[in-house]
Length: 277
Length: 295
Image (cartoon, rainbow over all chains, first blue to last red; front, side, top):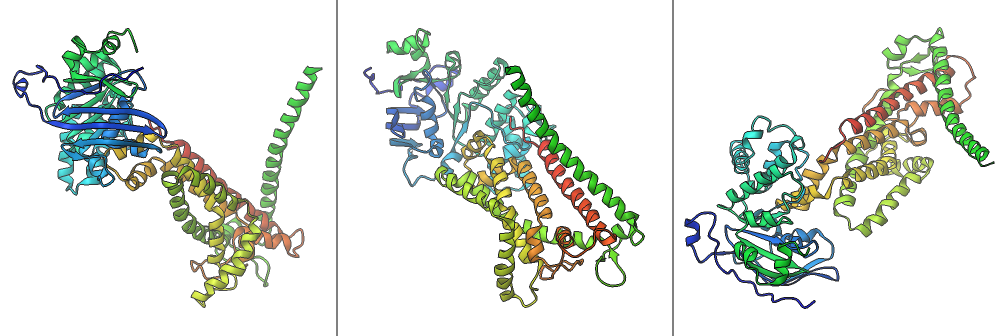
């Protein structure tokens, strides 16, 4: 198969969810990828990706399994560093700063770019300690400040009301949806600018999924969000921009409305409408 | 024909199982019976056994049977052994589980487990002829037999138990927890010590307790290197005697097959059995009770 054209541009800012936001026609770029290639050993997982993710918007990555969308996401905060044989070339910039070179402070990068995984993975610690974990790593805070950060994060993640009376209980006692929101709270507690979400709802029931989606729309005010999802409706519901990937290439990227209603490539259309994938 | 074959195999298997159960029960029965004999003797009372600290069943006109000096010697050696083996073993386990390249681990772990296969008499001579002279360089106070040299050797003996079991406990901590930690900007060190290690703590604790039970029961090293002078002391330079050491001395010595000093051996054995049983049960209980549920 001949790879489709790789250029992808932001076509137009989306008109939703609020009118005032649609006014800013020139969106700032948060994450920039240029000619980005990635390998696992000899296998090339990503082919020359060119992409600019706008700041404080939700960008969703869709495509069939194995298309490289999770790989791409995990490169943005260098989670792939832990995988033996994983390497990448090209340009990866976050807020204009290189995030791929050997001199990059990966620990600092991950503080700036948080990640939420497919399966909720709370630490076997108390709810409080889960949220405080990252804060304690990076900041010297007083006890009161720490408590404030934990409460703020849990509130922001929409979990505070449910857990405020049992902060010292194990996080493993929470439901799957609560655990995932705890993981989001844990991620935003360290003060990131970007949140990566790797199929954050695929292990959750519809109700918890709805809660997480509401939360994402809320978080969008403060964070740049990238989400990998297998759920077309979810991508359509929450994201401002959508990237369709296939076999390690970026087939189409644009405003979600355009990608879903007026896809420029037949492959995209086939995938979205369920004829393929 | 085939049916008979099946039955024959079943019979052999059942027989083998029953045999080991029978042996265990027989040992328990002998221990119990002879211990009862011991306390039936005129020279000793239960109060003296558990209430005094002087152990002197062989020499002198007056025999003393205060178990605590032997227990003290045992715990002194086991304590030294754990002080050596726990830090070293845990650091090694964390290295193997969290830092070592898979190839390095595949060589190092079996190599370490070879340590467990060395006959303990070799460790005993190692303690007696190498460690003790080396220790004497540092301090004149060390006896030719001393608790420290024996303890260090026992520590090396139990090192593979702690390392191997702890490493197993660390390795079953799900990768998702490590990812979650490093995703928050934790270094590998942070992840290892603040997430993986606490998550594996129950397995590690039970590893340490099982190793402690092994150290308490260890015989050959202490018989060779720790000496045969029962005393209540915390000075590791002193010659001491452990429960196991005493039993070796009795079993090999010219003690008649009756009399209070002969039966005392069984009382000490029963005590040792109870102690190690407690440790083993504690280890198993901790492992079950605090087994980590990660999800």
